[in-house]
Amino acid sequence: MAWYTIRRDCCGAVERIQVYGPSDTRQARANRTEMRPCQACARQRRAVEAERAAQQAAGQADLDGLPTLAGTDRQVAWALVLRDNTIKRALSLATIPGATGDHLDWLLDRICERTDAAWWIDHRAGLPRDDNCWTALRTSLTDEQKAEFAALGKESRP
Image: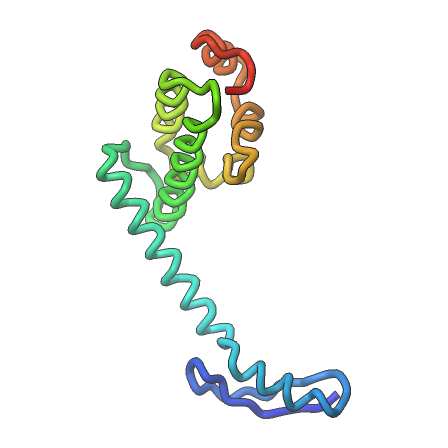
């Protein structure tokens, strides 16, 4: 265990860090830590990336004519990204064999019904976001919605 004073490459901040491990590798670890961004710089970078993603999602929502979301500015920015990602995943369902345009239209209508930003944030864990999109979607539907979807002519996985 040893203490090293390092200067961060990102902003020049000087910090005192404790490095553990064999004495012959400590200096190399301290040098690598200098190259990593400090917590403040990392937080700022994440905020900039989140703002950029929110602006892209808002621009896409305007182009697509989607309804505006209700909530605080931070909620709306976050929910726009969540909704945009959900729409992209829903559009990927169109490539699944057996999926019809009616299925996609129905799904997009359900997505557009949700205009409360808090709903998108509260339900983000259940939103389809991976290759298992269809399973996540089916589990999030109510029985009435499942029946309505099945009435479109496809009772099993599209």
